[in-house]
Amino acid sequence: MYPEYLVAPMREELTKVGFEELKDAQSVEQAIKSEGTVFVMVNSVCGCAAANARPAARFAAANEKHPDRLVTVFAGMETEAVNAARNLMLPYPPSSPSMALFKDGKLVHIIERHQIEGRPAQMIADNLIGAFEQYC
Image (cartoon, rainbow, N blue to C red; front, side, top):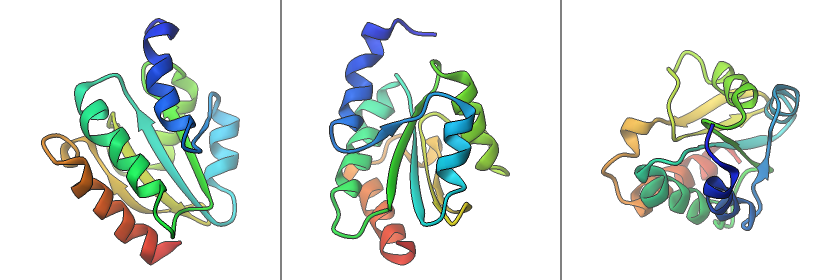
């Protein structure tokens, strides 16, 4: 667990653009298994989350065509919520940061940490926007 004062600005970077924080397993399962499209951002304190993942998620969320819901869980903080999200992302291994798109409760697109590290935020956003255009 990290001190809340440390992660608060990292949370706000997403919530101020419309992401809903999910902090327990029940809310994660309800959101992801709901009808429609749900974009899940597994947030993290690491440098690639700051430089690449969060900016990419913000850019993609601003696209005209985007998921019905934007949600986030924070690795290293709300363990129960993160584990619930990761269980729904199987067979992909746990990854922080990571991003996943669900449609009607089914995983249709995922970006893992190894696809985030070293890639420009706009490249990641373009990947997400392509998925949004296809599934949303």
